[in-house]
Length: 255
Image (tube, rainbow, N blue to C red; front, side):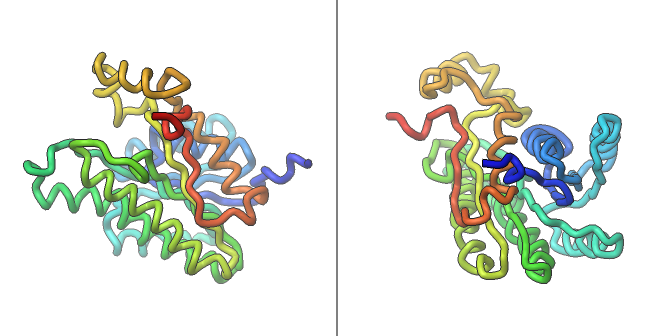
């Protein structure tokens, strides 16, 4: 089998929430496979620093700062790409937030903030990307789910609902856009060593639970998502559509 199946040369990828963390690791993996990058974040200064660091490594990268929950900003961002002649071939809907509170204490505004950031944004950005992908008859959409796309955990109800929605949004995208030459799939990371999980990593009880519950007996590293992202973005996955792949050290496979 030729490794050209995983070659992303000539492609351009937009990765939301990619100025750090999982999004940046995924972006670096796509770049290593040959893709040009369009990074996104809500903090223009941090985004500029990340873009500059990647360019210093010889990576082709652009920055596109916008709030993924702002529909008008999303539309304007894609119109700006159109005006510059930048076509997005690969979209990674990675932007997300966490909010931990028991449901009996959860305010509706916080519920909506998590749902809007983690789920509705993927629909809106996916729609704008797919409209353009459909015109070219090609596109790869990768949505970032979670173990909570399948299983619930106390105190993270809105995150659980959003990530469960990501799983079904991915299937809906596949159902509607597959005939247009677009494949939509998802990645479900396990417990990863990220800024979002820093408090949990530093909690001895939770850290011990993760390591005992995971057959790999450790937390995942952000860069360990890159290979799955490259696969789903590449010609190797041209007949894979509507699926979610869990990268979790085996956690989903054991009781």
